[in-house]
Length: 69
Image 1 (cartoon, rainbow, N blue to C red):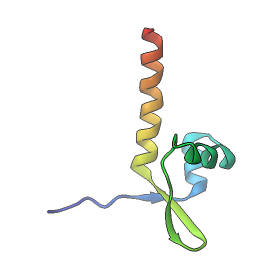
Image 2 (cartoon, rainbow, N blue to C red):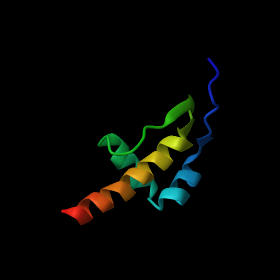
Image 3 (cartoon, rainbow, N blue to C red):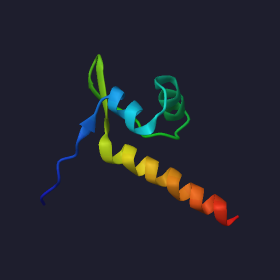
Image 4 (cartoon, rainbow, N blue to C red):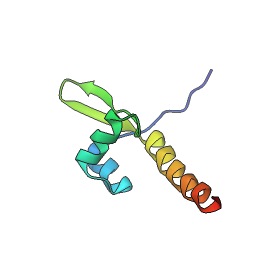
């Protein structure tokens, strides 16, 4: 089965596309409300870009759902 390569992104890019601070990203991860990072080595982590983009899409959908209430 052929699989598509997934792009990983580092924290500065995650912060840029979400506009969240480092502290908020890690707090929401701990709460299970943000995608978990991937450990690349003992001192390096990254996120799957599509998971972060999906998280943003979910926030947009939440907005529409809340508008209907």
